[in-house]
Image (cartoon, rainbow, N blue to C red; front, side, top):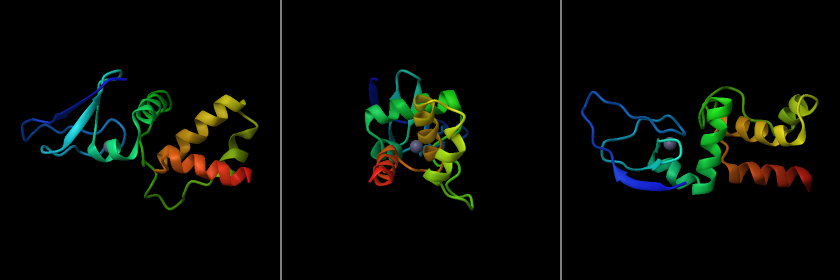
Length: 123
Ligand SMILES: [Zn+2]
């Protein structure tokens, strides 16, 4: 993935949203663009995710829907064990890994945090 860093310039009536978290992009914000998917990435997502993570995260949201932190402010939180139990009998291992990461991302859990949760589960 090639990332271009640029400034957003647009009229007052135009609103651009981040392709990962769907937050409004401020006119003075330095952003990047995912050339593979032509999505603008806000400065916050640029600081949270590595380039490889951004590519993976965008692919997951394109195929499974939603956006980063979509369910973050809901009353429930992401529970790794409950999600594994819920998905366990329906999916093979590869599908399970992608679905777990997708659900974690919806709750605003970053890939790094998700990996730590998985490591703690194994210990
Ligand atoms: Zn963002």
